[in-house]
Structures are given as C-alpha cells and as structure tokens.
Length: 163
Image 1 (cartoon, rainbow, N blue to C red):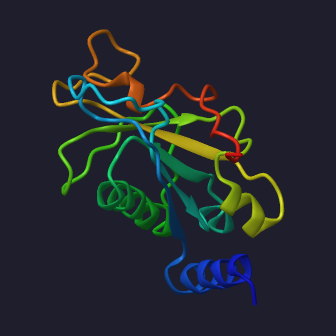
Image 2 (image 1 turned 60 degrees about the horizontal axis):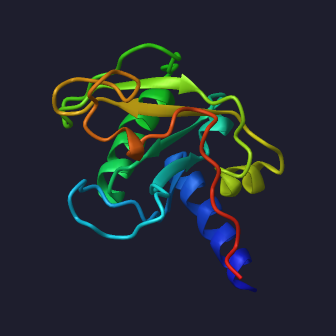
C-alpha cells in the first residue's frame, strides 16, 4: 500500500467513525504585519471531507492555526450531523470561540479540496467560512485586521508543485 492509499484508508476510517475528516493544508503567510519576513502569501487552510455524504457542502476556512480551524469545522460538522444546514450569508456564533463566522458559496472548488474530491470521486461543493476580526469586522469590510489571511471566495488558487 503506497502513501496515498494509506492516507485514503485513514480518511475513510475517520469519516466512518465521526462523520467527517478535517484536512489541514500548510501555508506560508505570516500573521504579523511587522515581521519583515519574505513569505509568498499563501494562507494555510483546512477543509472537511465527509459532510457531502451527509447531504451538505464541505467546509473550508483560511488563515487559522490547525487546532482552531479543526475546532471550527468540527463544531459546524456537529451542527450538520444534528440536521442543521449552513446557509450562505447567515452569521454563526460559537460558545467556545469569540468570533463570528459567515458561510459563503465558493463558486469554483477547483484544486482547493483535492482530498474531498478524491474521496467522492467527483468535485464536491464547498462553503468558505469567513470569520470576523477582534473588532467584529469581516474580511470584506474596511479596516479588517488581516484580509490577506482570508482570500475572497473563488480568488484563491493553491500553488502548483514545486520543481
């Protein structure tokens, strides 16, 4: 069994047990505006694999550390598993996280969630979870603290393989 087959088997086992899997994709965007580092500006992101099997679009969130991204997706996955439907434009709150989230339709899932597409052997729909900053502003609003961490739906393209 090669590495991809082992990964696919792990995803399948987790989806069967919990209902979904959270895939985290490393980025290289610095969250500080004053670090002086030479990052290329690719934000990290996480997405679900398995919610489509529950009759719901998969979820993707950008610019959060792994534990936070997984916590957000897991909290919303539990809502979906309990029969909830996340509607684009609705504002969601959490008991365990101070930020608000707004699901947005993602017009082109493309290569963003390859693991989910491979799992279902087709391109599946995605909702992008946009969250507010500490001042309560969403990334499309003026003076948002870090809009570079949350590309607008349909504008992000993962980098290709390095040569």
